[in-house]
Length: 273
Image (cartoon, rainbow, N blue to C red; front, top):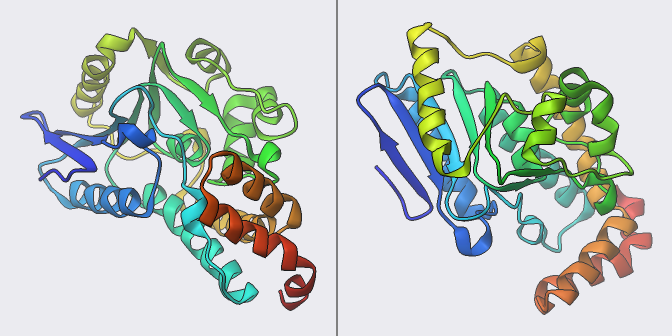
């Protein structure tokens, strides 16, 4: 069953393709998009007919990451901190807890949490139009989605370039060279290639795996720690001022003003954390 935001297709081989369908907003993870995605992942994971899940995006982007404006509201600092930490951990645990193999088919640019969550899946296959961005340092944020441990183990010396000051955004070919993705294919053949790869998995009787040799328990523990650190970073004046300026430039005045109020009052309310 498809929704407007997640298109669902299951073929005779037991491959379920989930397509994030909000191209006007670059398939960004709004509250509604995440709710629909969670439901689709859970349904596919529980369906005995489904052997492999493929996740991809409609339009020119794979996913622009989490809608940070929707993650905030004016509340008691401890309440806001707990909310951010809880929701962030829940997002990535949805991927960690999946029992079915999941293949990410990146059809275009992927940003932030959509990249780190992809690394928590079994493999990534990329269109030659894909690009990967994790601009945490530029935002004043900290690594998320277990990237503080998965990136160093999986992409080695390239990890600091993506996670810290440089903010490198590798192309699909560069991502292949550093081991971030498993295959790169022509854009127009992405889904065909992803399904062929999924059939290889089914024929081999492959179950759920975690890249880098991590266990589910290890990843969930790291996710919990990172989520606490990220919540603290999100309430830091540097992050709040950056979000205010970003949303003001985008003419999203109400969201910008919310961040401005949080930024302006942060010296007082941070004492309550």
